[in-house]
Image (cartoon, rainbow, N blue to C red; front, side, top):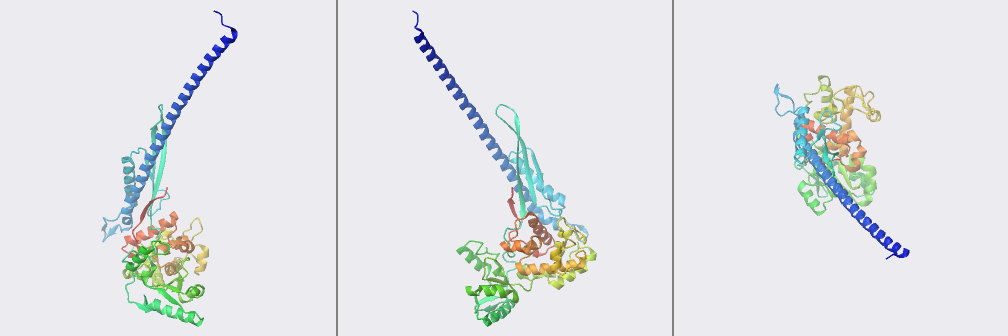
Length: 443
């Protein structure tokens, strides 16, 4: 039977459409399979990257932990009575501890190509460690690609340091009382002069709070656990016996303008009522124990500078050990040192700061050490804390005063940590930190 042309064309078209549909279906299935393979590869890649990143993070944290445990040993004297001191640790050995801990932890968590470095390594006491992982991974269909991840951790002073830890530096008495509130006797006498001046201007000052023990502070913090408004126990300046919360609110303007004349400083920009008596720096109230004040010039100070440090410490009532550790960190006792940013001399004064302290020649070590002690005395009065005063010397009082904390700058963090570490190594309790150095991931 012969098909009519129109009927033949219809059946042929049907067969063609069926073949095209089958081809499209197979193509779609192939796309789905390919997408599944790609998605699986991507998911596997993300999973592998997450595993490698975890290994790097844990390695960095482990290395930092080992460094923290050994940190103080860097500052122990190498010799005691002429014999090697087993507590002393050389810088190379300190770094080796960090490397071993970081690499071992990363490898135990599956990493293979592990590299450990110390970015921005401080020549005295590195506090940052970087763990990089560079591992080959298998890809779908054969072959390998390199997977690179990294993590950094650091040692740093606690983000907020207002005073030594609980039991260190808390004013033990005797107390004087004004309006029923306890305080140091010298603070009370200064308040009498402040109150008399205010009364002459028609303002009656009210004391809402004076000295508070750590136990009392703990109760307040439990009621309002916000460190911005209530300091954590062991960090409140009220524990020093120098701090007063004053009112009424109508007196805030007068206090801001007149309190400095009576050596009261406004401690926090956000608390117009909180004023601290800033004289008598160098006592237990600002982070020094009685023993710390009596510590002489450390043995590592070059002989030609010993008398200058001793005289400056006595004149400005600042620990000679603190000044010496700071000068070593600043310049390595090089009276002719110059920094890339323009700081000069043994105490690394910027020209404007030198002029403000009457330092005509920053390369004259005796003059510079005296100006250094003068400036540290002022910063201790302003911030009532050795760590904060050191941070202000390095980063500027404005940056520290804005948060009453050590600013999160790597240079400043390393600066404060190194000097406090040296003081601890010398047995000077000035350097003790509340809670010790913190460990944190930074990258």
